[in-house]
Image (cartoon, rainbow, N blue to C red):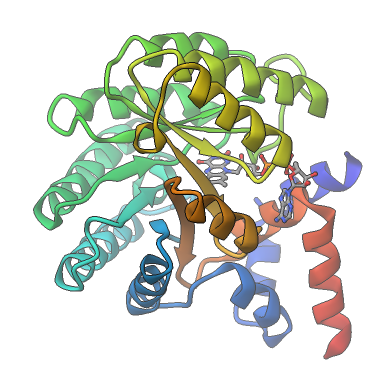
Length: 310
Ligand code: FAD
């Protein structure tokens, strides 16, 4: 728990981010979890995964954007990526995931408008390419504005997906609200950010219990649940709940991160399930990778081994 909190604090440190970026030291770890630096790398990876029957959601790495120009660059990056996906004929298997703070949400009052405009332009490019967008969920202070952002765009883009995090106490209420929206694409995850005991669960068993409760609610609704977890127990429960509520494999999907449990991704896809792999690309990998280490000591150990080998 202490290691997790320390790593999650490190994930937000600009000083450590600057020190880590570009160092050869970290390349081994980056290569395992990140498709590459360029949109072309992500498209190539999406194509390879599609050949193996796997869907993808591509994330242009970057978050907590401190300047509108950077948010504009990220938006252009996504639009370029979406054009490439369309041209490569991958729009039916690959979508994009967008972090609201990467397109401006962290920039105060004006940031809300800026993020809404940028996300709308990304959605327009996705519609043109023939695919969809899911809006990632970040730290707790962004949950309410992100849900408002998604609600404001869903009228025009009904396929716009959002994420709920089971570690937050508010999520039972948010799940009930989503469950009332037929067709809503909802990714359920445990949550990758530091939790405040006043507003979130800090014990793993409480997070897991909340996940099961919320997943049950989504499965028993007309939403499209996206089950984002590597946890074998929760994957089994998802399978059982889907059956219990009469969902066939096209009525929900499993989601896992690139580089995490690839053999399980394959196993589920071989059963005929829809499995979507979250594929990050870009240079700004620092925060993403440190969160991966925080959630799994084995990832931190892998990082340490890579370091010692050099
Ligand atoms: P954990 O509680 O980390 O692990 C439970 C068990 O699962 C472990 O004991 C182990 O048996 C197994 N396991 C877990 N990881 C691995 C692994 N790499 N290899 C082998 N076994 C493993 N978080 C957000 O806050 N916002 C988001 O928008 C968001 N989007 C996500 C999108 C996707 C597709 C996924 C998969 C996760 C996303 N997350 C997001 C991260 C998520 O919140 C969790 O932090 C992360 O998935 C770890 O939790 P877990 O459910 O996999 O299980």
